[in-house]
Image (tube, rainbow, N blue to C red; front, top):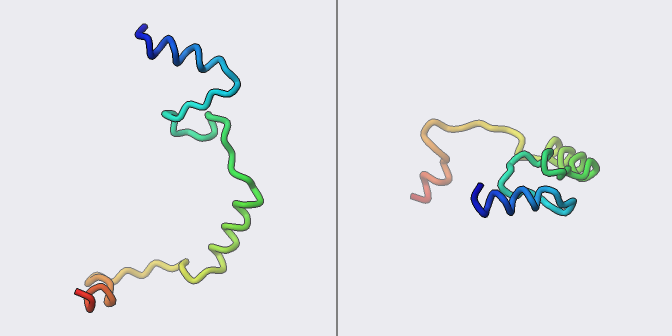
Length: 66
């Protein structure tokens, strides 16, 4: 095993170790605050940016700006 692998295995044994290469936040022990998620989701549901209606020709504001 190379020096990086040896150091990684030693670090994984620590309770303070967070693997920043692992993209699965559940496996890393990270979890979002449920109250914050509920608040953000409520704001999303009541907000004006909930619809998606693309124009095949592109945004009219962008076309006029160009």
